[in-house]
Image (cartoon, rainbow, N blue to C red; front, side):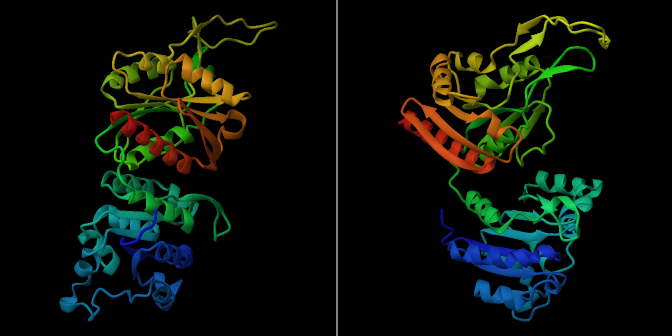
Length: 397
């Protein structure tokens, strides 16, 4: 997707990541966007307005009182014809301003006075990002409808490592493109399950499956980006809730089943990404089991098959299953497609995907198989959601 005809206001705040804005500007312009740049005074200490002017082909704005705008109304006029305001990098200070409605310079003032959506790419030291104050500000911004892209984890200019790196320009470009994509699931209700379940053995031990929840959370975000109303039913994971997504936290398979039953009948799409434990302990111990010589025998019983139950409803939603296999991926995925009567199964090799940020997946439906290749899980989730929307559109016709 190109950005031809899209008008973007790119804001820069102070931080070493400001150098990435040069490449981001180049990529946006190359993709066809009309880019207008606004910089804070601190941003000009890291990269010059002349650089951004040369790359955008337009004057760069830095002063709230710039006489080039009649009546000193730059904070109004500069954003009125824009389709998106993108602030990259967005410093911790600037996130705090946005969260509290403060406006003391050109960029913060026009963000407050804008009529178009706002996307920010946080960039700061790992400790600053993880501080309680920044966490509160980020959550406030998400609740206010601001789109947060990143941050990413990795090496930082200060020499430390962790979350806080600004999203790379190519990834930011992808986020902007998907922001402008057609809302193929507008008006649809989507339920996604994600993460593992934990089945208690005693008060301190559990049976579980390996799952980081990353793919399920990516699918929930992609469905929301496509315009759907999304309910995310999640096992225990350490991931933030995707913007605009309603989340329900569960621990056991039966709790997940109960949560799904509340929403499945009214859903248009059900995407079962969770690694639900197939078995649970029949009689979990009420006290911690003490270590003793010899073997410990546990009596197990089957957990409910959540996906099969949803697919068997009289008027089921469009059901998508996941087949994480260690071998014979195509055969096992097709078998799952037929056994549960599903329209679509997503197959991947568990040893390549568990806990990773990237994966390789193939889609299996009644028309055949559709390899999506290898890539970041969010990118693959977006392709999956687009495939689902396409299948639903063909079925409707």
